[in-house]
Amino acid sequence: MGVDFIREQSGKPWRKRWDKGLDRFKSPGLFDVQFSNKQRIVTADLNGGSNLKAGDQVVVQCDGKAVIVCSGHRQVGAIHGSPADVRAAIKGCGGVALGTVERVGLFGNNAELSIR
Image (cartoon, rainbow, N blue to C red; front, side, top):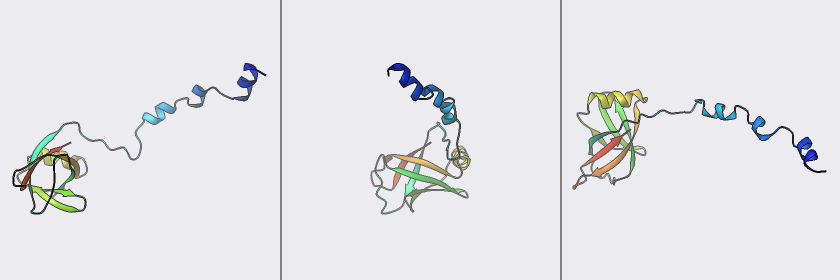
Protein backbone atom coordinates (compact mmCIF):
# COMPACT_ATOMS: atom_id res chain seq x y z
CA MET A 1 0.00 0.00 0.00
CA GLY A 2 2.64 2.44 -0.99
CA VAL A 3 4.09 3.78 -4.17
CA ASP A 4 3.28 0.58 -6.08
CA PHE A 5 -0.44 0.93 -5.33
CA ILE A 6 -0.49 4.59 -6.38
CA ARG A 7 1.30 3.82 -9.65
CA GLU A 8 -1.10 0.99 -10.45
CA GLN A 9 -4.29 2.93 -9.70
CA SER A 10 -3.39 6.30 -11.16
CA GLY A 11 -3.27 5.20 -14.78
CA LYS A 12 -1.01 6.83 -17.31
CA PRO A 13 1.42 9.48 -16.20
CA TRP A 14 0.39 13.08 -16.74
CA ARG A 15 2.75 13.60 -19.68
CA LYS A 16 1.29 10.72 -21.64
CA ARG A 17 -2.27 11.90 -21.08
CA TRP A 18 -1.40 15.25 -22.64
CA ASP A 19 0.71 13.73 -25.41
CA LYS A 20 0.67 16.20 -28.33
CA GLY A 21 -1.91 18.34 -26.52
CA LEU A 22 0.40 21.34 -26.62
CA ASP A 23 0.87 20.88 -30.36
CA ARG A 24 -2.90 20.82 -30.87
CA PHE A 25 -3.23 23.95 -28.74
CA LYS A 26 -0.67 25.84 -30.86
CA SER A 27 -2.27 24.93 -34.19
CA PRO A 28 -4.53 27.63 -35.70
CA GLY A 29 -8.22 27.28 -35.05
CA LEU A 30 -11.44 28.56 -36.55
CA PHE A 31 -11.59 31.81 -34.55
CA ASP A 32 -7.94 32.91 -34.76
CA VAL A 33 -7.58 36.46 -36.06
CA GLN A 34 -4.28 37.66 -37.39
CA PHE A 35 -3.51 41.35 -36.93
CA SER A 36 -0.59 43.06 -38.52
CA ASN A 37 2.20 44.17 -36.18
CA LYS A 38 2.91 47.24 -38.28
CA GLN A 39 1.47 50.33 -36.63
CA ARG A 40 0.23 53.27 -38.69
CA ILE A 41 -0.79 56.67 -37.33
CA VAL A 42 -3.43 58.69 -39.19
CA THR A 43 -5.41 61.83 -38.44
CA ALA A 44 -9.19 61.53 -38.31
CA ASP A 45 -11.70 64.36 -38.48
CA LEU A 46 -14.22 63.90 -35.67
CA ASN A 47 -17.92 64.65 -35.83
CA GLY A 48 -19.37 67.24 -33.50
CA GLY A 49 -20.40 65.85 -30.14
CA SER A 50 -17.97 62.95 -30.10
CA ASN A 51 -16.19 62.73 -26.78
CA LEU A 52 -13.14 60.58 -27.44
CA LYS A 53 -10.11 60.72 -25.18
CA ALA A 54 -6.59 59.33 -25.43
CA GLY A 55 -6.49 55.57 -24.97
CA ASP A 56 -10.02 54.87 -26.28
CA GLN A 57 -10.34 52.03 -28.76
CA VAL A 58 -12.27 52.60 -31.96
CA VAL A 59 -13.16 50.56 -35.01
CA VAL A 60 -11.85 51.75 -38.37
CA GLN A 61 -13.80 50.56 -41.43
CA CYS A 62 -13.33 50.90 -45.16
CA ASP A 63 -16.55 52.05 -46.80
CA GLY A 64 -15.68 52.16 -50.49
CA LYS A 65 -13.07 54.90 -50.84
CA ALA A 66 -13.98 56.50 -47.52
CA VAL A 67 -12.56 55.32 -44.21
CA ILE A 68 -14.88 55.79 -41.24
CA VAL A 69 -14.20 55.69 -37.50
CA CYS A 70 -16.79 54.12 -35.19
CA SER A 71 -17.08 53.94 -31.44
CA GLY A 72 -19.58 51.28 -30.51
CA HIS A 73 -22.44 51.43 -33.01
CA ARG A 74 -22.10 55.08 -33.97
CA GLN A 75 -19.83 56.85 -36.40
CA VAL A 76 -17.63 59.38 -34.63
CA GLY A 77 -15.44 60.51 -37.51
CA ALA A 78 -13.81 59.89 -40.86
CA ILE A 79 -10.32 59.75 -42.28
CA HIS A 80 -10.17 61.96 -45.39
CA GLY A 81 -7.35 61.44 -47.86
CA SER A 82 -6.10 58.24 -46.26
CA PRO A 83 -2.98 56.74 -47.87
CA ALA A 84 -3.44 53.78 -50.19
CA ASP A 85 -1.37 51.47 -47.98
CA VAL A 86 -3.64 52.21 -44.99
CA ARG A 87 -6.76 51.38 -47.03
CA ALA A 88 -5.08 48.22 -48.37
CA ALA A 89 -4.11 47.12 -44.85
CA ILE A 90 -7.66 47.64 -43.58
CA LYS A 91 -9.15 45.79 -46.55
CA GLY A 92 -6.65 42.98 -45.94
CA CYS A 93 -8.12 42.51 -42.43
CA GLY A 94 -11.62 42.05 -43.81
CA GLY A 95 -12.43 45.77 -44.08
CA VAL A 96 -12.24 46.35 -40.33
CA ALA A 97 -9.29 47.30 -38.12
CA LEU A 98 -8.82 48.23 -34.48
CA GLY A 99 -7.55 51.72 -33.71
CA THR A 100 -6.41 53.44 -30.54
CA VAL A 101 -6.77 57.16 -29.94
CA GLU A 102 -3.29 58.58 -29.33
CA ARG A 103 -4.18 62.29 -29.10
CA VAL A 104 -7.23 64.47 -29.45
CA GLY A 105 -6.95 67.96 -30.89
CA LEU A 106 -7.30 71.06 -28.74
CA PHE A 107 -10.80 71.84 -30.00
CA GLY A 108 -11.87 68.17 -30.20
CA ASN A 109 -12.37 68.24 -33.96
CA ASN A 110 -9.56 65.85 -34.90
CA ALA A 111 -7.67 62.93 -33.38
CA GLU A 112 -4.57 60.92 -34.11
CA LEU A 113 -5.30 57.20 -34.33
CA SER A 114 -2.82 54.35 -34.31
CA ILE A 115 -4.05 51.50 -36.47
CA ARG A 116 -2.64 47.98 -36.22
